[in-house]
Amino acid sequence: MATNQRFTVKYRRKRAGRTNYRKRLHALAGGVPRLVVRKSLHHMQLQIIEYQPTGDRVLVSATTKELSKQGYKGATSNLPAAYLCGVLLAKKAKAKKVIHAVADIGFTTPVKGAVVFAAVAGARAGGLDVPADEKALPDKKRLHGEHVAAYAMLIKKDDALYKKMFAAYLRHGLAPETLPKHVQEVEAKLK
Image 1 (cartoon, helix red, strand yellow):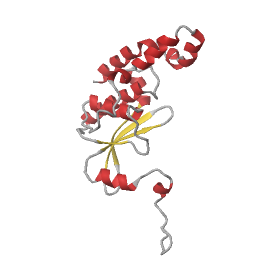
Image 2 (cartoon, helix red, strand yellow):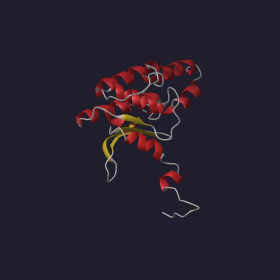
Image 3 (cartoon, helix red, strand yellow):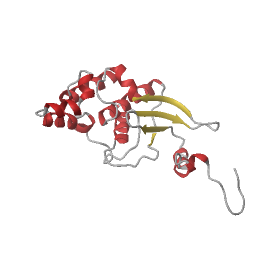
Image 4 (cartoon, one colour):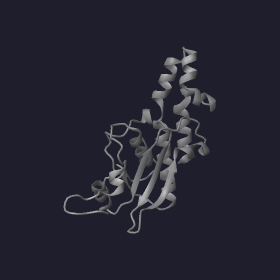
């Protein structure tokens, strides 16, 4: 790393905007594993990571891609999928004797009811002890997809729009109006 009196080159991950080292140091000071929640355009990835002096170690990992093996037929980028992924991660964490974690949402802007907080709510519902503000977590109706079902019922009269908006659900054999029931069934299977 180049340093002199005039200029110091910042760490590569800080330059790339991938790591906030001040927040990372604060999170690691407690010695509790981190529940790392990262989202992409179509999927969510959750990991429980423990700090090691030689490098971080992943204890447990779960993605929304794994939900199809559990019988989930819905979209993998929405609130219900993030919630179920959190429940799946908590189930895996119990098997590895991990019971506490601190949420780490990275550079995602913390917005009340966001998808990353749905994943945290799922981990908490699955039995993992993750401290979080109750106001930030989405309500149960949204976590189970009742807002999707209500919208599907609203536009069902326009068949072309309905088929366009919910093509992925229909392709997998799931009527979007039944999403809340389907989410509850998958959640019961995971618990």
